[in-house]
Image (cartoon, rainbow, N blue to C red; front, side):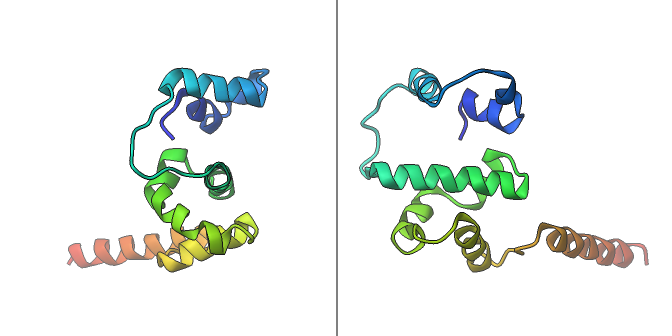
Length: 126
C-alpha cells in the first residue's frame, strides 16, 4: 500500500505508462524484495482477494490506498475472506463499512460530518 506502483495507481499516472501485470509485480518485488517476515502467511487466494478488494474500495469511494488501508487492515480482511469472498466487491465493502459503523454512501457521510461541524461551530459562537 506504500509502494511506488500504488502511488502511480492512486494519482492515475499509471494510465500513461504501458505496463503489463507481470511488470507491475516485478516492480513491487524489486522495491520490497521477497521476505519471510511475519508468522502469519497468506494464501495466494487471500492475497488476490484482499488486493482486489482494496483496489475496488479505493476506486468506488475515490480514496487513496493509504486511506483505505487505514479503514480496514489486511488482518481483518483475511478474517473475512471465507465468508465474504463469494460476495461481490460492492457487497463485501458495504458489509465492512456497515460493521464499522461507517456510512455506505459517501455523500451522506460528508453531509453528516458537515452537520457535526455546524453544531460545533454554532456552540462555539455563543
